[in-house]
Image (cartoon, rainbow, N blue to C red):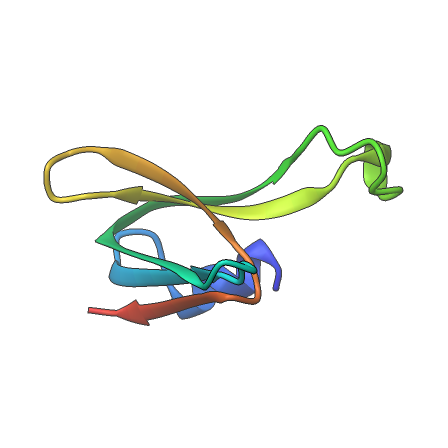
Length: 85
């Protein structure tokens, strides 16, 4: 998903609930966070093995402002579920 496609579905300022699951051998780990989207961007990581633009792995990241003011940056992947609240 591109940043533009994401922003069409979930514009900046929209309140959302983001649920993620990490599949682990010891059992799935699940987390959920709710807040308002502050920003959405592609950022590159330092993955030397990615073999894409600049030899980096590009991740879609959502900046989410929680009710207490904390800013959470969330990597969006195929195991991420986002719903408007």
